[in-house]
Image (cartoon, rainbow, N blue to C red; front, side, top):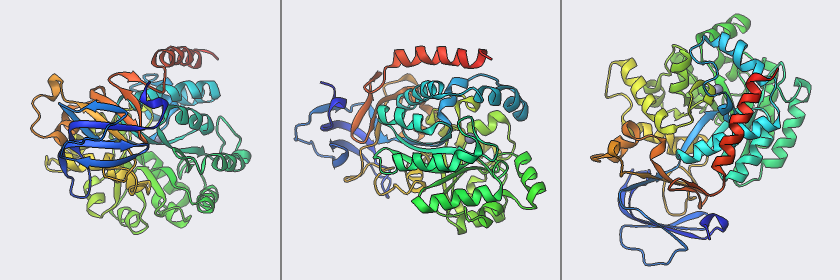
Amino acid sequence: MKQSEYNMSILIKDAWILTQDKKRKQIHGNIYIEDTTITQISEKPVTIEADFKIKGDRKLVLPGLINMHTHIPMTLLRGYGDDMVLNQWLEERIWPVEAKLNPRYISCGTKLGLLEMISSGTTMFLDMYFFEDTIGVETEKAGLRGYLGSGILDYGTPEYPFSKIFSEFEHFIERWKDHELVKPVVAPHGTYTCNPETLRRAGELAEKYNLLLHIHCSETRDEVYTVQDRYGRRPVEILKETGLLNKNMILAHCGWITKGEILDIKKYNASVVHCPVSNMKIATGGVAPLPELLSADVIVTLGTDGAASNNALDMFETMKFAALLQKQHRWDPQVLPAQTVFDLATINSAKALHMDHMLGSIEEGKKADIIIVDLDKPRLTPCHDPISHLVYAANGSDVYATIVNGKILMLNGEFYTLNKEDIIEDAIECAEDLTTSS
Ligand SMILES: [Zn+2]
């Protein structure tokens, strides 16, 4: 019987464990998982019998990676309109296709994204898109943790006209707010697509249900100028005035923010998601000022953004790009060392989601969201420093196992909750329909 068919015990034996605890301790030893929780971490041999054993030799065991900004169904648009100027890409490629979205396409693209995330070691993700209820159903079935935000826009969405967005979203919140793995998030799209009144309403909704907020913020210079022309203020200032800049707010991008805005983000305890691959591919120009944000003690995290502008959902790749972009931009190889980057993708993300008491590190009593990387690869040999390998040498295909909430979702290329062949076949068909039918 597969472990996924029931939640019992798992023993990971004789592995190199990167705990990401407060001391960033690394140990050679064993992890015992009972039901959903890590109950024992030990350097000594563990004699307890487990229902399921994983041999850890030549393996690295680490907390699952957390993708803090994506639009998961956009996997169907991977590679559909590369090397284009942003506005032309949106107007000619993305928006016409998004107008045709329906639950079938969403389900198909979501399953493809979940498959990709599980195979590449992502255990939790923060999404902003449309038809989030369908995304919730698929996420629950796949067994990943998803923080899901239905995009709010002044001109409506492919799912709802503006007049229905808030009432429908409340139904979505009621359905998922107490779920163990899927959580609702309030997601106004941006300060250039939501007017201050819409932003205020979104803030009130988040407050009413005590939910996290997620928004695109200062991704491009054009966005900042548009907002400044319209309101005489920059995006962060608008968020401050509308009451959205607070400890529940997670700001995606922040490539065009000022030193003053960094101080405000810190003062109001909002968090930032850096999406280096998408920013470079779209050529947004501005580079998120990570050294300044980190020295101001802002919680900084990492995201892939949607697969239409990345074109993968691989958090290993994102960690490497994050490190290299800052080093190149600052002419300084000491900026953003590997350990810091690894922190952004694990414990920092758990902090931004207010889940660091349960997730983001491997510690006794925490939830078992764990991935295992296979070191038995040419590109990972030799291994002088495992953190260096994770950031600079590994990629998503080196992931050997993905465990979420104590349940094995993938082991040695075999998926326990998803049917890889069916998902890929459906995705090819859906992507073709979506991009060719009128
Ligand atoms: Zn985005």
